[in-house]
Image (cartoon, rainbow, N blue to C red; front, top):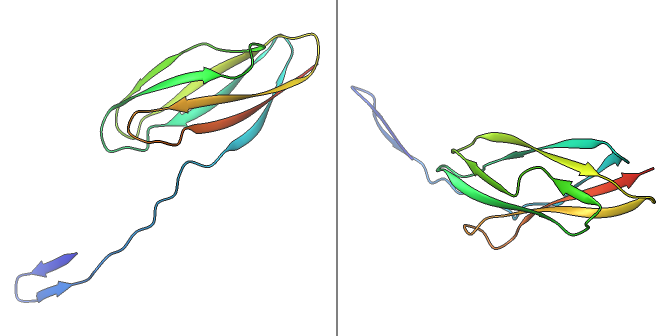
Length: 109
């Protein structure tokens, strides 16, 4: 980082940063026959496309693809329908990163 000003000289500083992979979130409880809103933010500085999937057929997302502008936030609505309580995962992936975003789901009766 270089900060300079007229008559003030120039200051230089080395900046270092740390980034970590997306961390699992949840569980998000969803009642049978109802839906839940899970907010997802594009963490990138440019527009990106994200794929949305679930690992349990009792959960159904309303969108399978999210096209988000940089830093934009969008809600993914996930419905639950089952005769018994079950768990599942909402998985959001992008070709820009190798680790997907995981949201644990908890279907309740």
